[in-house]
Length: 268
Image 1 (cartoon, rainbow, N blue to C red):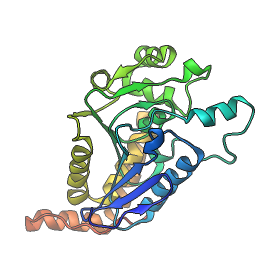
Image 2: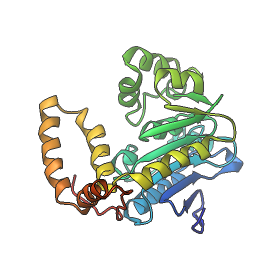
Image 3: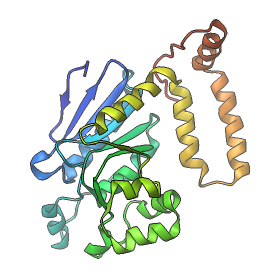
């Protein structure tokens, strides 16, 4: 990476000179199992990326051979005993609101809250053979953090019910066939593949357009077609007033690659 790694206790923040941030869940001694500290640091990393002019696309992966196999059993045992997980908790769908694409590079086991987080990413790569499970029903819990909503829209209600109610283990290959994962990678290549995809977006595409389209994809599915059409008209007028539109047209006329500036926050 071109920029120095910034290390929190459980999440690493690396930005390269192409505008790609790699956020790495980093508790390799505990297989990157989720904790309150990791949750806070992960969301802090997303917040930082949203306002970081260097960052255009975000890639999330895990240290070592696992992505995130769920909540740390030590934390879960404390909850069973009556302790609170946390107070004033952030919505677990926070990644869907970040105005920059979030790409998953799922390098190994992905379960429970780890899978719930991955479902909130905009696009997912997974290594061949990686194991997935929703896990919730085996712990006497409902589908957490909008995972039922996400899975139903990705794979349909019957497959979503199967994955959630049975909590069975399924592989990356099945996840890809169902639509949970969009791309498969060979062992050792998932982060490289995800970063290459992210770099192509970061270097070729308007940051304003990416933010608007992400907002449309996540929000329009909760509206009618007519509401989506009206909102698209509003966003079109807003986009035409931005420097990215001027540069996009100018680069087309001048037959050269576009050179877009950093993302400037918009109320979408």
